[in-house]
Amino acid sequence: MRVVLYTGKGGVGKTTTAAATAVCAARRGIATLVVSADAAHSLGDVLDQRLDAPEARLEPQAVTENLHALEVDARAAMERHWGRVRDYLISLFRYQGIEEVVAEELALLPGAEELATLLAVEELASSGRFDFVIVDCAPTGSTLRLVTLPDVADGTLRWLLRLQKVLSSVVTPLARSLVPAPLPGAEVFRDADNLLYKKLHGLRKRLSSADTSVRLVVTPERMVIDEARRAHTDLALFDVGCDAIVMNRLLPEAACAEAFFQDWGAVQEERCREVEALFEPLPVLRAPLQDDEVVGLERLARQGEALFAEAEPDATLCKAPRPRYTRSKEGYRLSMSLPGASADDLDVVKMEDELVVTTASRRRAIALPRRIAALDLAGARLDRGRLVVRFAVAPS
Ligand SMILES: Nc1ncnc2c1ncn2[C@@H]1O[C@H](COP(=O)(O)OP(=O)(O)OP(=O)(O)O)[C@@H](O)[C@H]1O
Ligand SMILES: [Mg+2]
Image (cartoon, rainbow, N blue to C red; front, side, top):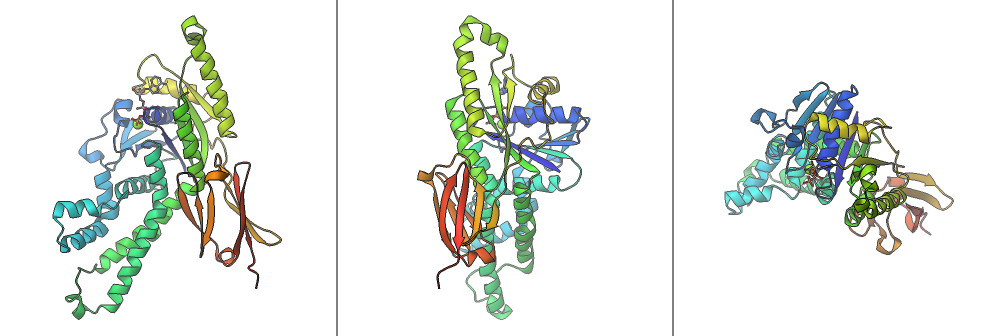
């Protein structure tokens, strides 16, 4: 099962590219699902089909042969994946004298809605109904938050569960009435356990799988490219591989030959070369600027054929190297891809059994295998886009 997520700066053409990829794949005979995980859905508009009917809240709609589409309803996804845990949190906040509406807002822990959306995508991806799932994501910042959420939620939920397990094991039913807060029932534990151990881990596994890739959509503009570069580094930090860059809205050659556009054409060519060099070894898929909005199946099919003239839309277009532990003379070595990171912004520390890596904009705590957690951090360096961390046996 192949999953491709499209992201990039606002307005660069993520939804268009996701839909064009989907139409192209479906026409080439691949059972395809395209999902919008952006709260501001526009997938239905681009496909020129209503996807917001009540029965379409979590159930994909047939669009054409081999193609289904869905705009995930975040509220419905919350109910499905977060339901009783959220109800418990609401009752806890209510107990503390917080008004119901405010309690409901608070119980939407930061990012919970986005996480539920992604869990809905994961449910569909693992259903076996589709061979290719394409996700139209929100602009870069939110997407990064989205893919890093399983790690963050994992920590929070683990803490909550530990606390509650302790509480429920020391508090007898008789004492329950004396404890100054409602205690969660067994079903809340079960749901939280299920959420944590099955769903979040399943999602993390899916995101780090070699069959899942992000494609970054850019236009030939400096700010757009800079944002994509940061995203590329941060995604690698969270072990989510990118397999291509999509360069959208390129002036066609015929237009560049016109006197008025000649300079424009030269700048554009320079930017394309720059992008190829910056993101090497990722391939750069080029999509022309169309003479009108890219809406409807025919226009999308044309855009898809331009993008995938030389590749299959569901292929893994570049294999990202995974983090690797190897034995060394002094102990172990961890090597992970961190393209675009600069040594000035990088910080690496070991805290108990975790390695905490901080780049210019993100921090990730990487759980270390037990054997390595027992060693000392001996050094870290950047080597041609890879972070190499050395672990050594502690001097006795
Ligand atoms: N190659 C193209 N040629 C012409 N128009 C395009 C092209 N790509 C995208 N557009 C148009 O640009 C507009 C924005 O595209 P789209 O909605 O795909 O961007 P987005 O990145 O998904 O935006 P948002 O960040 O708001 O979700 C749309 O009107 C779309 O039809
Ligand atoms: Mg969009």
